[in-house]
Image 1: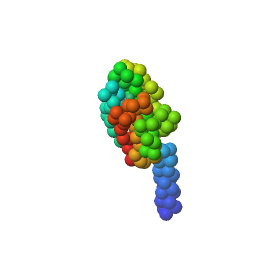
Image 2 (image 1 turned 180 degrees about the horizontal axis):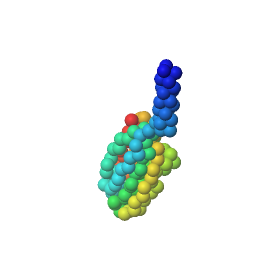
Image 3 (image 1 turned 90 degrees about the vertical axis):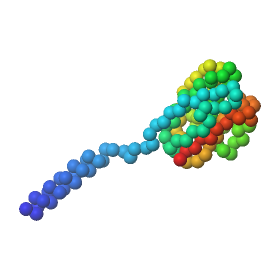
Image 4 (image 1 turned 90 degrees about the horizontal axis):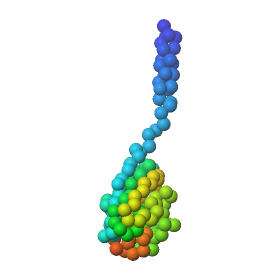
Amino acid sequence: MKRFTLFITMLLTGLLLVACGGSEPAGPAPVSFDVAGYDEFRFEPQDITVDAGAQVTINFENVGALEHNWLLVSQAVDPATATEVDALAGANTGILGGGESTSITFTAPPAGTYTIVCTVPGHAVGGMVGTFTSQ
Ligand SMILES: [Cu+2]
């Protein structure tokens, strides 16, 4: 009888391991944001908060007539002189003409605070900046 109990215990343990073994720990859920760029040198929304490591999609629309872009740079970079070269991997829409839109997807950087900026000369100084928080 004890052997039988042991056998059943081992069988159930085995089944449990099989049932649980296949599932990877779930990462943060993907997120997406619709962002508009305005000729009044602002983004809407201005600030974005995500989970570190999440897949982030930015659907960026230039609703103005001027050229604009949306990109993410380290806080060490001065927004006033930032260029597309400073963009974190994948976090750069490229320059869009008035009325154009595009989508980009990138992996949210490690926990910290980053700067959103439009690198068209004069726009960041005019206020076309925001805060991107990975948490
Ligand atoms: Cu701009």
